[in-house]
Image (cartoon, rainbow over all chains, first blue to last red):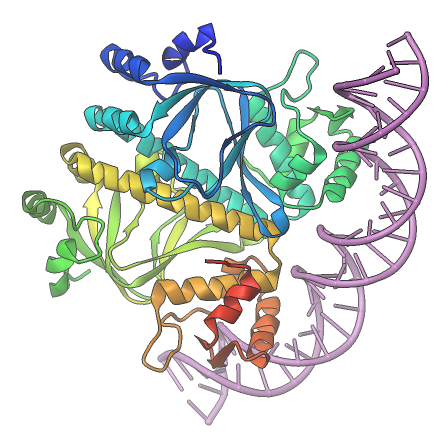
Length: 232
Length: 232
DNA sequence: CGATTAATTGATACTTCTCAAATCCTGTGG
DNA sequence: CCACAGGATTTGAGAAGTATCAATTAATCG
């Protein structure tokens, strides 16, 4: 893999997990890390494996998913600029519980396990930040559990569309700035591909979203919130 | 609330989250904590509130759940001896995302927020232990998400019965050592109470479990594993 | 021993899945 | 640039899985 020039900057990236570290610590990390890139569709970490380090995404979009029965993917969440991949299993000392695959060409830093733990041990504040992060994720996971258990497919689809918008934003034409197949959307919503397709066209008819090919635009956010039973 | 005598011991409880602390740190915690108890059915922390401290369960059983639409509970997980309640929202600095209610009379230590953070800051190893714990929970949550999204109700019920057995064990007669209503089981499985009832009686007919009143005994663990698609 | 709550059963309606077939895209090689 | 192969999307029809509602029986608690 090439070392892209911009990777020099990735530790000080505004939104990076490492952004609050002291300059000294960042310098040290810079020496310890290597830069890697992944093509669209490439697997970054694989469920069941033992992790040897963490990836910090500099630029790109990644899906995190587990394999369910019948080999069907269940997308747990998405990971994008500044966020970490693989820290969960490293810290809990377990096998990797979810695979990660690049949704588009992605650039990342790779930080070996030993270096990662060194940074944690020498920077209690960073350790606390990781703790805060994982506890936040835990809350999000709880919400997802409740949605899956209690909402119907249309409600969940509306919720996911809002999550996609909040996570990836919109391009200049107003479309969600993420390219997913209908199947991937279904794998996040927890339903069959055909059901997603039917409900997307239903939401279109109702005027809450629009779409061109696989690209989707949210046109009435508050309507989707109502459908999804989100009151925030 | 009275201060039960046995609470003196709870920090050194074999399985306590705090068990690895130095004696000095434990002594300090002993001065900072207070002892509380909850009757069966009593709410310990309430979704949406701002937490002021954490509870460490000394003895008892607690359900952690969020309110879904229509006021239906979704049980996220159970908490028992040695485990913490409320640490997630304290550490992520968010509102409490899940309520906790005692399933039976429960004794706990209450550690105020400031004391909890003091212990974390002064004991990096403890901080790392919390990190490990929350990352483990994150993995469990991921599994639950995949189950809810991909397994049918019978598969999920089988899985939950196995989880209950692993979490709470069996009494001398072989029944699960936890008393839940059918509705609570349904709120964990993510289905209607009547569906749980029908499937429990189906599993009974098939000889994999037995039951007397509300008490349930797992009689064929590996059959349940097969039904639940668990291959471990 | 009531009175209340929980558990059970049956009938029916609704949601969602599955399978099959048709159409639409997209990237590629000629 | 065009045609084509292969995958993705869409639509329809029917089956399966679950939920809901109502009525009955069982268990529990003061």
